Length: 72
Image (cartoon, rainbow, N blue to C red):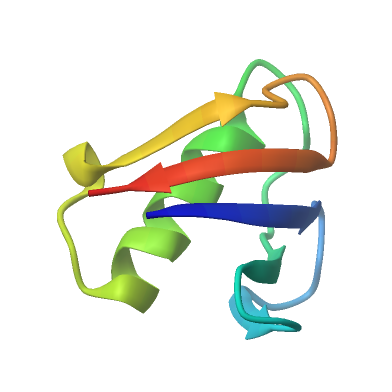
């Protein structure tokens, strides 16, 4: 499954909000430095979808807030 994610780094809390069928907003506490926010996105999405972290992969958008993520 491919989903579209908007990331909000350096948030006070972490969580996932579903805005449409395949669109989500992910809030993470980590800053967007050295891939820390991307790692947090993978961790938060794996918890939300109840899959291992190895089953969550960022396909596009590793350098921006808009991402396409594959969950398998």
